[in-house]
Image (cartoon, rainbow, N blue to C red; front, side):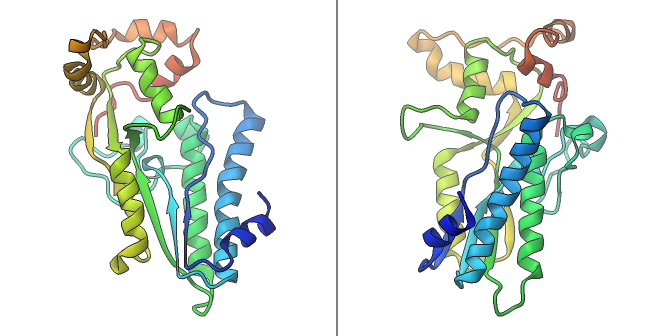
Length: 249
């Protein structure tokens, strides 16, 4: 979408919510990585430029917990130390090995820098929301990256690794976006959206309590390290699990 297209959509509005950003499940090649980062960063800035031009009161941008929390072992906070809105992920491939984390971090940082650089007469209120992995009912039949990841666990395409994940209900994320627009005190703040944090086998155990009696088989046992290591040579998404294995926070 061009700058002109966005301006046409924004003109006459009071509030703008920027939701869109590429979310590749499988890691793309170098050209693909550059495209994801460019789209995320420039997409956000395109919306913000339009907001400034047309005197929008407030912009709400969907960021991600990926822009807050590091997965690289040496960069993680000690277990038990909470992440807050003051934390930022390290946006380098050497650290994260995931273009999504890089793109979301760079896009959100660029957005805050742009908003703060504006003259006060052109500065809109800005709110960013950083949800963890979304779970819940899809609005239609089309899947998305969050659900694809969960399906891989459910269908044993990816083993239930002994690593912590953070999850949040999609209904709560929708409500948070509405409040980010309406609540005056939310202006110019960043918010983490998270419902629960647990090790993957523990989470799948809760899923199994509901779906097990219905005849579904949910894998609960975390495989040994050597099995994941061998599988990483053949399955891309298993290879990515090595970066988060035994992740605790």
